Length: 245
Image (cartoon, rainbow, N blue to C red; front, side, top):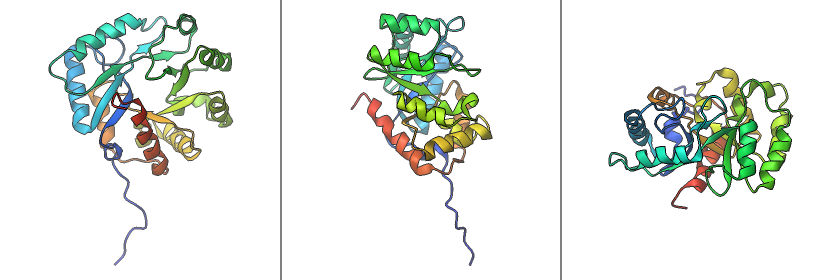
């Protein structure tokens, strides 16, 4: 009898361990391109819980001229959502900061909402990185912060020079992979870069980057990357961010 020599690829949600904490989501109502109102937030979080999510850190965008979120406004939205009797999942909050001039001002003032222990979630423009990115990362660490770069696998202007990722790591930047990248949600090139970053052991943490219920479909799909062992390791590392730890 013939049998396949290839292991069956797991579905993405099957890799999520008991107690999984998501450190990147857009579930707070009315702050960015995520949930638009309280009803959407509650429904999305309840569906995430059914998939196996156990704790969430909500990270709304903070982006000059687009989503001018303040620390106070984010906390207020979190309070409103966290106080509802319809949620049973532990929910915390931070922000996903675009590195721009406004971010520099916030950094100088020490006004950054962190994931935990001074780890701050940052993102780059999808068009090009700041010319002075490494200087900014250096200043950020001088202020006592630890940069966690969101979805490095999605910055395609770095795809032709893989060494830039290694340089970013040496500069003290941690990497957060989007889980939906490993099932091809953002396209084959992003999936391939995810695999390459995993193979090079450059991924520190993972996040869902969920914005709406339509994203949940990706968690039912089979994982396409080859380096599932490295992916599992990064998923397990998210335990660091749990309120229970």
